[in-house]
Amino acid sequence: MTEAEQARPIYLDYQATTPVDPRVAEAMWPYFTQAFGNPHSVHHSYGREAEDAVEAARAEVARLIGAEPREIVFTSGATESNNTAIKGAARFHGPMGKRHVVTVATEHKCVLESAKALQKDGFEVEILPVEPDGRVDLDRLAAAIRDDTAIVSVMAANNEIGVLQPLAEIGRLCRDKRVLFHSDAAQAVGKVPVDVNEMAIDLLSLSGHKLYGPKGIGALYVRRRPRARIAPLLDGGGQERTLRSGTVPAPLVVGLGEACRLANAEMTAEAERLGALRQRLWDGLRGHVPDAYVNGNWEARLPGNLNVSVPGLDAETLIAATPGVAYSTASACSSTSVEPSYVLSALGLGDRDAAASIRLGLGRMTTRAEVDRAAEAIGRTAARLRAEGAGQLADTTAG
Ligand SMILES: *Cc1c(COP(=O)(O)O)cnc(C)c1O
Image (tube, rainbow, N blue to C red; front, side, top):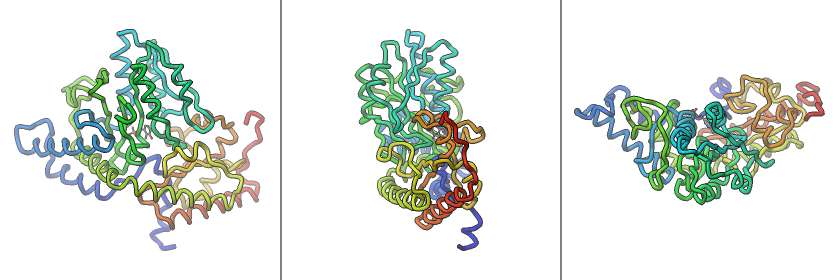
């Protein structure tokens, strides 16, 4: 192992965040220092060159999801996009008697908390369970939709287990019932094909830092035909079709656009490469801990995600004992709490199995050599801890 390799752990936490692709960083740079104009001050060349760059980026984002450029609203990230879609739809349609919201138990916290906030405002929120493989049951979803449903929100890919939801089927169902369909696609966009028309999506959230773009930038797709109507959360200058007031951060937008352009060009080959690397990682791990198992559907899954339980072994202990690899137990947002993952609970895992689960996220910069070293380090350490009787999880009848 070279000194450089020893200096930093192998990064296998691509579902928490991705590095900015160097090509993205390079594209952004001039917009901080040279072309620094306010894209809304178009009476001079500074503003106009920023505006041109923002519009070129908007077209790239749109292209990646099969949308029109004018259907893209720039936001600060998927958290804001999700809040805007869900609360915005409720605020617009609530006064017209639509006061029912449908979402799913494995959604990201920002979706569930947005729904919970609406509940406090008197909306009725229905949170659907998932099947043991992490997918929603379509019949159950169909049965949940009512005449007064304002919006259905189902994520494209889960951030912990990487499971892909059947978006096209859900979209068709929502379109038939004339109810708005929102999807949090922060993990899916740029990794697997997402097309807002093929999937009949009305509102879609995406995030720059999940697809090799910068943090602090994202987008909300808002369908024009048939028009998805939402009320804005922010009052101000009326930027972004009045849906998101505030100066558009041109350098970040340029970065998001370049990230989407690269994803468009490289996604297919990258998915194939990552799928093979993930198989290699899984095979390597299993060689050391043959009773380990994968959480969530294996086929309908992000190519770069592996979520594994090593029965009886505390994941926190395992992670602490493998400092050469950077990976995590569950979503980054809840990693400060010792609560078992609500996503794994929703799959039916008991607390003991959930506490034995690790999330390994592979991505664009992951190499085969890194995968081999990580499999060896994690697998060997797990086997050793078990042999020593260290990190054993208590046998709970609840589990
Ligand atoms: C990361 C993530 C978010 C939050 O995105 P930010 O841009 O960090 O606000 C929301 N949903 C999912 C599924 C995510 O993975």
